[in-house]
Image (tube, rainbow, N blue to C red; front, side):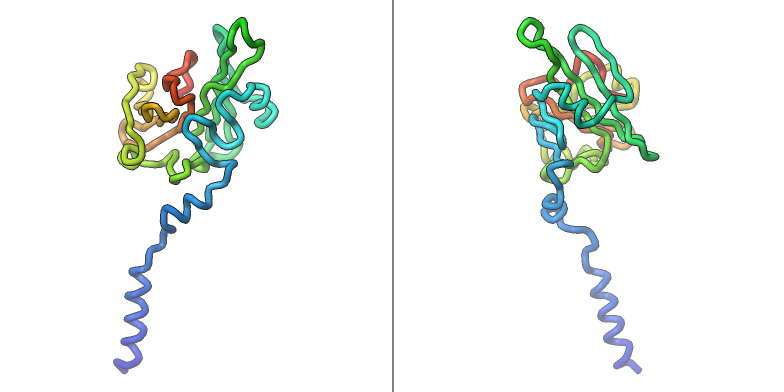
Length: 187
């Protein structure tokens, strides 16, 4: 009888020790260009410096928008139960161009990831291990329970839930640009 149970117990114990998660390198390799967050460059099909009309052509009419002083904020919400948000902040180079260019792109969907697999849902401690983060003082976000951290000189910022310390949104901007926009992008 023992001869029968020993192989079964051995295989069961070995099966319990096998990792169920893919290694980070494998999951990072599965990230497509459509979901890639590139610090200082863009997110998915949107790029920093791209004309705002291109964003409208790709994403359609925004669900919400605001404009002031040559700047505009457009937001699109997912049609599923999560209502993830994509927001684009644009501005016009007054006197030199008569159209708006994308200056900041924010996403709250966990579908978008950096090449290293980081994005919404990532703990602050993990982000701090990959980026040199600096807390950005912002009274509006603090009142809403968010902390904003920017990766100095990299062109990426993270909205962090002040209680859970989990990333709620990722913003990409020019590497030499501040994380804050003229019009508040944060929810």
